[in-house]
Image 1: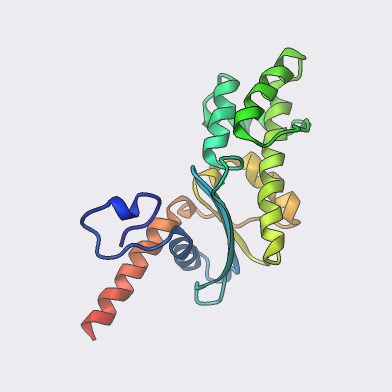
Image 2: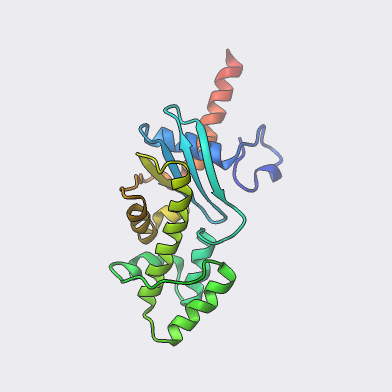
Length: 200
């Protein structure tokens, strides 16, 4: 099974499966009671509603703009002369400043302008985290918010985004050590199911 953006470019796979299907399957394996998956990766952000078997029932996706993705946070970190891994720690307990733009191209210059104005970078980072969370929460609301929500993808490691997202949705998000690899795990589980079917 191949998944992710490069799945159609891998010559040795038997089947290509979307990230949406794989994240749903993998996340359900990790936490059985989930009914929603929020996946924020490097290229896009997704909200996936799942049934009790881990099948996708509905989804919303932002793949046309880098805003609200891991790449977006990397751009912000670079503008602040930081590594992306430092963002969560620096913004902890900071009072977020509102940013007027969520476009990756323009927010970088806005961040620089805020620094020139003397705004502390901790507040800027917190504001960015809040903006990302609000954007993703709006997608979740279109699907009904969910009751038991698991956070997957690389951005789940950012405690700042996770905290603001929980506030926006009004509930804590489930995160387990394997959350970041939920998509790959889902692909493996689907491959296992295919092998079992072929052996019948």
